Amino acid sequence: MFLPVNREEMHKLGWEELDIVLVTGDAYIDHPSFGIALIGKYLVSKGYKVGVIARPDINNDDSFLQLPRPKLFFGISSGNVDSMINNYTAMKKVRNDDVYAEKGCKVKRPDRAVIAYTSKIKQLYKGAITLLGGVEASLRRFPHYDYWQNKVRNSILFDSKADYLIYGQGEKAILEFAEYIRKGENENIKRIRNLAYIENKGFTPNDDYNFIELKEFEKLVSDKIAYNEFIKTVHLNANPYLNTGFKLKFQGRSLIVNPPQYPVSMNEMDSYYDIDYERKPHPVYKEKIPAFDMIKDSVTIHRGCFGGCSFCAIGEHQGKFIQSRSEKSILTEIKAIKSKTVTDLGGPSANMYDMKGRELDKCKTCRRSSCVFPKICSNLNTSHKHILNLYENASKIKKVFINSGIRHELALEYPEYIRELALKYVSGLLKIAPEHTQKEVLDLMYKPEISKFEEFKRIFEKASLKQQFVLPYLISSFPGCTIDEMKKMMDYLMKNRIRIEQVQDFIPSPLIIASAMYYTEVNPINGKSIYIPKDEIERKLHRSMMQYFKPENRRLLIKKGIL
Image (cartoon, rainbow, N blue to C red; front, side, top):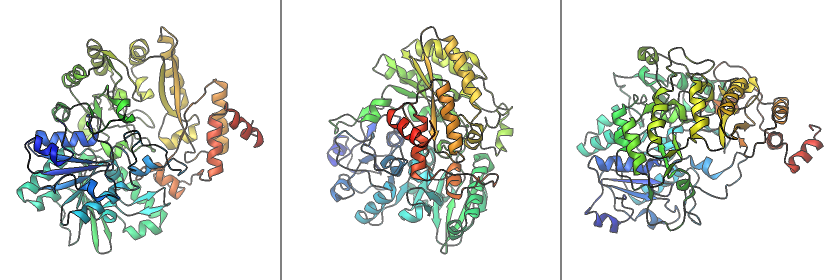
């Protein structure tokens, strides 16, 4: 079944009312790679009646009125991506398309979609409970530097005037939330992990949690040193086993952010995916949806990432502990795919499946941002045996390819994994993300030296029985990257005859460490000043040096005396 998107579909299901309505900026695709489908179908499996308002037109009230007012609450999300990153390039230019929309769709996802949708819901459904979720809400739960306005904005809870926010992976928390609302136990809501809310009265902290009081919002806006201290404090206390929550004052009220939830068990992960998904877009769409075409035959095998890259928000959203599905659950989903080929068995990093610390007690007290930088933690079990067994058993069912990013220094701990990739699971080209070539910049990224990439490439290409290539994925204009550093990168690419077809300009996403570097021009972890390439002309020059082989770029580089 699809979740209903209008009253007619509700009635076909025999539903006269809804418990929960989910609002999303994405087209509704009933596939477990899309958050709304995961949350909605999981709640239905627990007995709740759930409907979806997908890609509503903010200028048309009727698009928000296709479903009746829910008995319990509205769950509001921008979709699978932050709306500002979705709508704008790194140079703040408007993007021409939206891969999460039906081709030809004229309804634009609004900027700051969560705020826009919440405002409209509150206008049309007076007094309705509003719960924010998804990536945009997660990364904006705290005050945060906003690249598009070049200033520190307040928590999205203050800006949207929503009632509650669930950050991170939301299935467990939203089920608790729904049950407390259904039972009328609203005070118990404030005990939920992964929850953020605004306290208008005096705050009585939950005895189970340790709350840190952060600097007031006004101080974070006016003082970049205070902002960096805040970012450092939040990141060093992200481990859920530390039971650390946060309190931040603003104009007589307090933002309360409860600790993250503990990693869910394998059985719990299975329960999210072992549901009868339609694995296709809702029939209301007549044209293709590019995001669906990219993932329709892929399977998620785990969540979370312990890589801790300073430019990446995955750890802040999915957590740093790997949460894996069972092999049985994964193989069952593979059998359900109609295609003869599985395009990906992956997650945030393809090769972290079922990895964890050998001694959990050591992990529970750890405050490291990364388990693999500056060196791989001695407590981390880096064996790739489980994932190779999974690949082998999956291959007995269908042809399997791996297209998720591979943490290459982790794979070097188990070279047999690299050889198996080359022999069985790659078709011609494998993209690996060293992100840069120069150590000074790589250190700020929390990435290993380029020699690790070279070693991975050597093992992979030696093991290949046919002509296969490893192509590096690189970021331009990263904090700490000067013209000299870019010149060294260009020389490296030219020397090794590497041609990068796609360039990723650095975008300072909310809440990440590298965003604080960009804003304050100081490393928030060690307090050292950093050079920041902010000028548009300089950023264009950085991109040109990464794609030195293009005629228009060569002309520019010759004009600037670089070539």
